[in-house]
Image 1 (cartoon, rainbow, N blue to C red):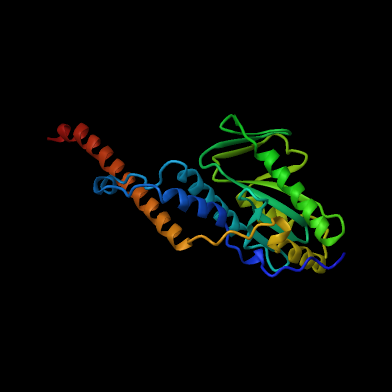
Image 2: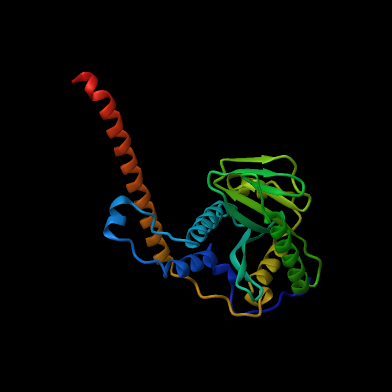
Length: 260
């Protein structure tokens, strides 16, 4: 292989979910603060599109935690900016088992069904397989150009939080699995890359200019996201307490007269 292209910046230091966290915070900026009554009853501080981006961020952070246990033989990059439209690849993983692009999908409480050509969420068609395959093809093409020899990236769709995942048939070009199986599955892959090849591919993949001619987006304010996350959790707890109190009041109204 040729020496990888030299760049001054590195995507290896980019934090997980940077892209979705940034978009979540941007959308949330336009949301009016909750009223005193809203806080008292535990209304959700997230509004509109910010909710889906918030859920997506939590999913990518969870997958990043799963990837963190891979060990020293593996290299992982998160939220890799690609193209000029502000999109990114959730995770790029390079190790003994090869090169992988991961498209994280958070479907809390949903039923996921996977067939040879489609992935359904609660019976609804999705573009998950097509998008994941597109990411892998792009990574393959760019890394091949960077190192001067063929590189094949494998596409993964990693599902987070689903109630069930039914695999009728694995798609030919995309592997679908739950987040809890991810690290174990990667470690079980047959060795196809030697350590020095992993390092050279990782050096190429960590260069922002490999993926996009635009400068990498600035890192979002993760402390603000942590505050938002805490606020969402507190609101959910308040709603749960209100629901518990409501049920308790009904039970009391039904049964106390019998003992009066």
